[in-house]
Length: 167
Image (tube, rainbow, N blue to C red):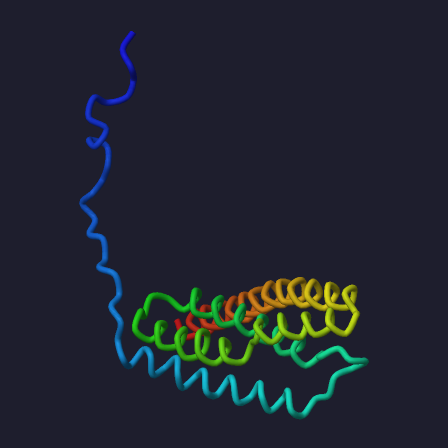
């Protein structure tokens, strides 16, 4: 009995599709990230300077990271649902996602603050702070995706109902 595989394994591969060239560095893209990062970082710093720690725990960093995770979920779901306008989506992703939300959220400060809690002889608080931030961030991202998906679905239904009403 002969092997069921073809003699030339490349025969069944569809290589007629063109593979897109990798995106090259572009200065305008770096500018979008820079501008968004300046805005996000300035907003984070303003909150950090305004909101005090609670019982020695820097809750502002926890809140910033959780809120940032929520909005990143909203952004990514929204970009995914709104089609394939590649240049517009890239600018939005770079400015809002990489720039603003990347500058707003701060996992380096989270790590530093967790280390400071350990240095202040509060290792269990440090572990709770780290774990809580990551878990709440994951839940916030899921909630942002779910919220945006529901909002986008309602918009789609409203548009289709309005189009039927016009017929």
